[in-house]
Amino acid sequence: MSKHQTRIAILGAGPSGLAQLRAFQTLRDKGQEIPEVVCFEKQEDWGGMWRYSWETCTDNNGEPIHGSMYRFLWINAPKEALEFGDYTFDEHFKEPIPSYVPRAVLKDYITSRVEKNNIRQYIRFNHAVRWVEYHEDRDIFTVCVMDHNTDQLITEEFDYVVCATGHFSTPNLPEVEGLSEFPGRILHSHEFRDAREFKDQDILIIGSSYSAEDIGTQCFKYGAKSITFSYRSSPIGHDWPKGFDERPLVTKVVGTTAHFKDGTTKEFDTIMFCTGFKFNFSFLHDNVRLKAKSSIYPADLYKGIFLIDNPKMMYVGMQDQYYTFNMFDTQAWYARDVIMGKIKLPSPNEMTEDSKKWMEKLAKCSTDEEYIDYQASYIQDILQATDYPDFNVYEQGLILKSWQGDKQEDIMGFRNKSYSSTITGTLASCLPKPWIEIMDDSYRGFMKQEFVPATEDALEDKSA
Image 1 (cartoon, helix red, strand yellow):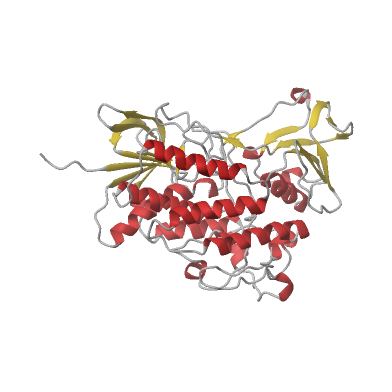
Image 2: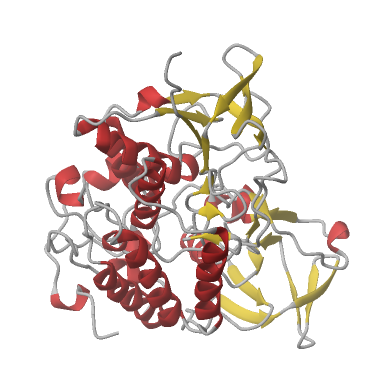
């Protein structure tokens, strides 16, 4: 009888799924035999959320649009805080570039790492996962997928499943009295695509998250008349320039007039919800579905990865994030080593206790600085168990803390700051003019600029 070939299904080819594929490819590069790995991606190409599409409803295959990416997005934290441990910006760009870059530039960095390592061979594009179920009697998963290339529904069996579908696709939409009668445009950030659409408009943004501040500043940059943030618990609190306003929660809308909790009112042309996203794993059976709410450390996961009730079901990239790509990498390397038998998982009770300790520690955090330190300690915990290159996690935490201070100091100018790589020490160059004046977000437009050496006032302050 032939030996059973271990098979692993990876759901999604965005940054998290690509991290998992890269983790296995590094073993093959070393001459080690690896299991059969199959990645299912419902889009026609990789990149996940970093693929821009003008579509907001369904794609050509009738699949719900996954991405929430919009034109003119620039990363809102320094690139030095998300640098891959095994593929530096120096290696990719061959010269210093600024700390803040547009979406297309960062997408090129993300995908080039896997492109040059021939990882595309493991991915089946235009394959939308319909159903995943674990069968305890046979200790096997069945994965049912719609192959839009052949218009066929196929089912295959796997020994492990890694869910890397992300969690920024299903909008969280609170109810607001009178909204159905509002005559202007109403949308969620998931549908936002182009800031130029809102030129000369008064915009109400409901929410005080990072997406709220970023979309608000983008719209203002491209000509919006005014931006008003409506917050539930506390204001964003930046030193906003003229044209910005923060008000407590909107209680109702009458015609074009929004009424706020403090008794004030204002007229608006557009109402936009930046109220976050919800976990939505409708394609997963209850016995493998993560039921926890979105969090920096979702409940029911061991090491933030393994479903405690069935650790052969893994989740990569499901945390609310300060760290991003390199955190996904450390999770992917850890998951790989468990699958390969290099790391042995403890008993279910021990996994539960470990998870509880992390959640208790999280409950004591209340500031951005504390959350950054928390996530850094989580990453360091799993990083030290694998052979993923050390990227100086806590030094990157200092960058993230300094970034928080930069925004408080100048919300419209923090992207003009420069940081040094924690891996190579390379100091980022400066933009040739302030971010607020750069209107071209394309890869070519950005890279053809004449970047200049960082000046003293553009350097990071690591005393934060």
